[in-house]
Length: 447
Image 1 (cartoon, rainbow, N blue to C red):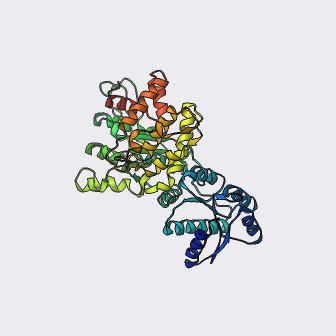
Image 2 (cartoon, helix red, strand yellow):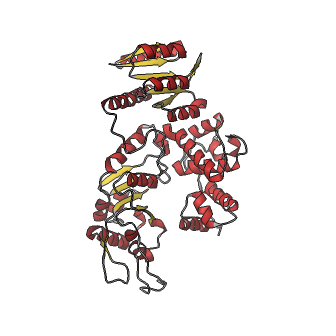
Image 3 (cartoon, rainbow, N blue to C red):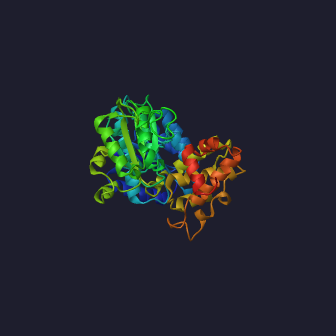
């Protein structure tokens, strides 16, 4: 039976939560103040501490620091209100295992307890084994934020599992969920991490030049081939090749790709010599490729070649517990890119974020925060700088009612203005490739 210290000054709430946890085979000790909790931690060995963020004689952060100085392995979970979520996120950066927002449902409590106790058990068994993915809220160079939701934990478990292998991975998920970020995390946790990671947007390659893009060409091999060119396979040799939106490849291009994967050799257009290639292939799609196979639009043999292991990237709707973590991360990025020093979000903005459905997922959240950071003149992002659609009662819960296109178009215009219409710098600022930026300029009639 696990032992839990519950620190909460609301007596009736404490008793209710205590009885609930005891019904699920946990021994619970109650404490109502910071100082009393410190004494109990000194006197008794606990498996887990649940503490409210606000206490009569202090706060949960102080208790967290006290506990971490005594026993860094003891998991601490903070209980917060909506307006305190940002503080809780910062507490996680200081070592809290998790936070849970009031009001919370019983299943959520049990899941958090289970996760915390599992971590405590693992930490007690070994102090030498480190996970491939960095600890909670720590950002890898890939922009991968380790969330706290159940869906995120499954995602990171799969990344950790497949990364050390050389298996091909098919990454699926809605548009904007961060599939390329997942691919980069797999690469950086693999034995090929010192070798190239080449990302290719299959949707941006005209079918007529796809073979040249993938396999390269020799000077003079066709009209416009004024120089020798290495293809993506050769550039990625010994590293990782990531094909985004692989479902956009034509049937002919699929055959060419399959042949290269089977033979592990490529022949540049106009060349008589084959080149051996050693790559790991990661692919991504927001389509149902299996359905495309059934409809005859995607080759079944290629599908199985790409899908040695599959990873589903959850939508932001399915990982709402991670929302504030990502908001903080995107704000930090926006501050760096725009040379700003915004410190956070107003409580009203946090509530709007929590209530909105985010049909554009992480990309939409990132765009909204970057735009808001650009428009903010004070220390906190306020409601007034958010797109109207986020707080409109008629639109906030309807995924079809809000398109990110208007927001993205405005962001592109602002970026171009900031860099005096230098498209290369604008693409860097927006985290686009130059080709993607040019395509979007054409799409929005900005060229």
